[in-house]
Amino acid sequence: MNKTETALKAMQESESEHFLLLSLSNSFARCSNYDEFLSVVNQELKDILGFDFLAIGTTDQHEKQYELFFHSDQKIAKLHQGLLYDVADCYFNEALQSADPIMIDLILPQQKKIVVPSFIANTTVFGIRELVILPLEYHKNNPSILFLFFKKPQTLDRNAMRLLKALTLPIALAVSNILITRKIENSDQKLFSLNSFRSSVSNIQKDENNSKIIGSSDAIKKIKILINQVAPSDSGVLILGESGTGKEVVASEIHTNSARSEKPMIKVNCAAIPVHLIESELFGHEKGSFTGAIEKRIGKFELANNGTLFLDEIGDLPLEMQTKLLRVLQEKEFDRIGGKKAIKVNVRIIAATNRDLPVEMQQGRFRKDLFYRLNIFPITIPPLRNRKDDIPDLCGHFLNKHSGTKNKNKTLSANALKEIIHYSWPGNIRELEHCIERSILLADGSVINEVSFLSDNEKILASEVYSEFQIKSLKEMEKEYILKIIKLCNGRISGPNGAAVKLEIPSTTLISKMQKLGIKKQHFLE
Image (cartoon, rainbow, N blue to C red; front, side, top):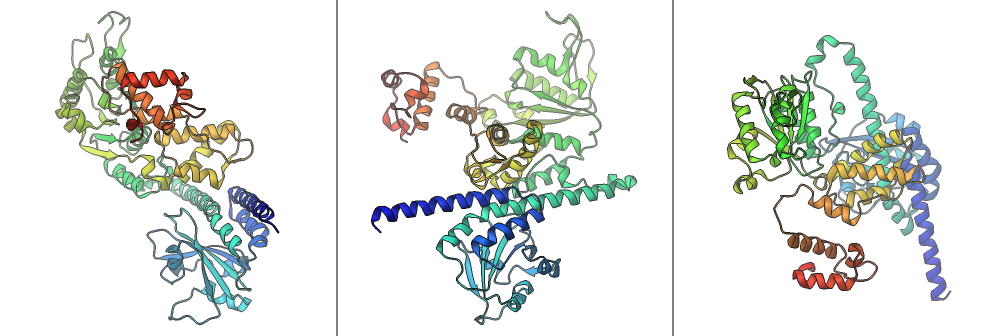
């Protein structure tokens, strides 16, 4: 066989392996319950990998024990149901710490005395000689280990090992989906039980699954703890975080769990209201109090009386209005525009901003006394890129949300989820939701294999949205924009993937502009 034939054969084998991986990944992606998972393992995976038994052990990251989540033989599964094993049994922990599959000869005596879990020890009666163990990908909150049992040792060759490692993510996703489904079913049963005892329901903490905050990462757990601590009080809350991180969701969660939950939560976006209308929007006005005031208007403070007022983008409030807001917070009363008497108000304030308020105070754009009045209980929401453990749960939530409205039941392939996890998400959760919604609409089949991310221009806008606003000349803005486009194009000026094409101008015109604006090579290669 010559070099060309060898290369062609290798290419064909690679394509065949890729097709096989894709087929198995799609099969696992469609698993929504234990029985479907069992069918894929025994009818598809077993023929390919040649194992005799397959088991999965799973635990919570804070637990010291694990249990069998799955076993391919239902008799063995039933026999070991409910049994717990020590994670330090030299099988579970050893697999977690290894980047590659570990092969263990079950016939050879162990060099050191260890406690062998019963589901492993008992397999020798079936003639099992070899055990292969490896961790499932991304399961940081529920570490899981895959156990493969073989009667014939050395069954897995190099190609089979490579396929097995590639399948750890699709299998992990299937396990996660089944665990989440079970959790929801269990929570429904608990809810039914609680409804039978309505007299004591107020003394029972709301189930975590009722929360609109999706995710179980350490960062999100801390935020949920803070919400539970502050919600019952009337203290003001300042929510900090980038655009799209879910500040309004956190505010709603605080209000829902407060004593004011039966009263309205009124929302005001301080950045979206024209400066000359903000005072009227917040405090209202009397008929005829100014040109255009053709009727009496009730302001947001009055509408939120005995409830909650959510002031979003508080960092964008003009200084004059900051002074008036401070007075209302201190005196608990305000005047309508054109009004003749002060109106008493009982409102809980939750404010939010994506701005760095200490910097804004230093620059004289935000009052220090207002900051201290608002900053009684701060909650900082991390960006999505710092809580990627939550992405699978968020994807599942948005798939359910938008598949229903579009009448398209969709699932994510393993490769699509990997793309999503590795993406930087400048627009955070809002961008992720829009991405999932677009992908549902664009996907042909039931499985989303390609993810619809933002375009280059949208990425620039997403990264710049809500960043610190500064007055700049048109020349400065043009220079910044051109530099960003050139950097996105990896320094290319001309050609099909060059910056000139993105800007829709001739490359000669772009070079001329660069010279006028003082843009040099070192500026976009830094």
